[in-house]
Amino acid sequence: MSDTSQMTSRVALDGVDDLVAVEEPLEIRVGGAPLAVTMRTPGHDEELAVGFLHGEGLLDLRSPVRAGLTDDLAANIVEVTATLTRDPGARRFYTTSSCGVCGRGALDEVALWAPDVGARDTPQVSRELLAALPDRLRQPGFAATGGLHATGLFDAAGTLLCVREDVGRHNAMDKVIGRQLLDGALPLGDRLLCVSGRLSFELVQKAAMAGAPVLVGVGAPTSLAVSLARECGMTLGGFAREGRINVYAGASRLSPAAGP
Image (tube, rainbow, N blue to C red; front, side, top):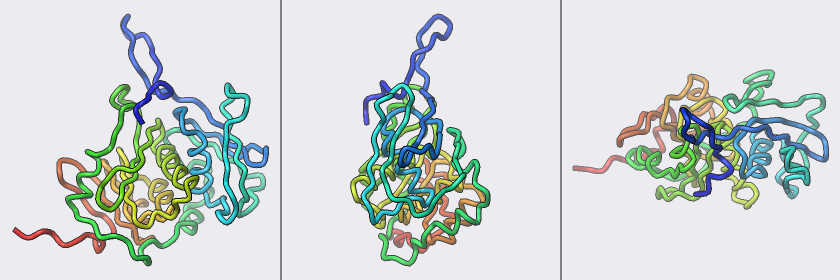
């Protein structure tokens, strides 16, 4: 993705134009009824909507899933056509660009949704490859503004397949997973995910819901992120930079180190 026109806005800074990241609300509707509002960077909104709903365990993937912006583009509304796994009832979601689990009643409920990715035949990966993933992310929006997070999807050889940027780290993840859902490419059993920042609980949960066996981050993990990754059989690596990485969960998936 090289077009940053939707992601950036010009503002005056000491009399000189400066680029900043765009942040606007997006309303997600299912069957015409408002279900969620999230603060996000515009672009790939259909992916964000279905990725978010999938991460919440709301989509029945046995039925077709479609999404599209409504005619009122200024209102920032995405309409999703899908069969839900359950009736959310009076529950509605509001998420900020910095928090993907705001409004959830209990963390235990989220943990129940995440499948065990360790029980399947998933690829062995080298520590060196995982440490190199952040350097392979393409982040033109971040380069222009310094204010956007990125999530990248890689194959087992480390080839970048999809990357999305957003002011919210969880939104960037939702957009990548939503793209794969719309393409019929879930679960991500032989894929690797890499994020440009810290590894929070909701990012591990979203990755696990998508069936991704490996998640790498440039920053630090939280205690809940490590716990959930271990429960789900996921390989979780943090502080991936300068050829090094700390592996907090799923070290058994690492291929043996090369000899001298």
